[in-house]
Length: 216
Image: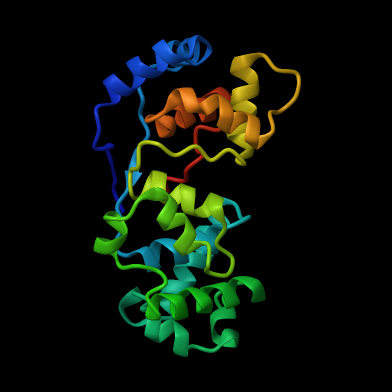
């Protein structure tokens, strides 16, 4: 799907961050305007299924498996009932591991049970509630939900503090000798509210992880 701009005033966000944190301000000056792009999302089910497939794989390998998963379904569009009815063995013919096939089936079942909200409901929910709901799905952790919040829902105030790239970028701009603990990063990041997504993009840039959120 095509990538789109974020629906908030990036210039105002960058100005606020520069004033709140001089070290981050230097990174902003070095890397230029905020240029993260968000991904379109048909349904949370499809976005999370893609996330499950892509976990711990390179972009090319994950893309190939994802394409084979889609090809298992009529019109290349998996639905929760169709996936729930498909055997694990059939799913694994796409190249999914046993754990990922089980996670995909659990995602389908929890979507049918409305643990995973529909698109309209999800867009109206606060970030913390979205995290609490979606981490109930097997194989979906907080980091995965944070990526969805940032890249699909375009939420402006997300800080994935366990992300290695975020931690490396923070250590670099703060000139630390060791990576920060997630709790310390979250504490420092309070000064970046309500623009922690924007700050995160600059931290990825500082860590040379400009593809921290896949855009392929």
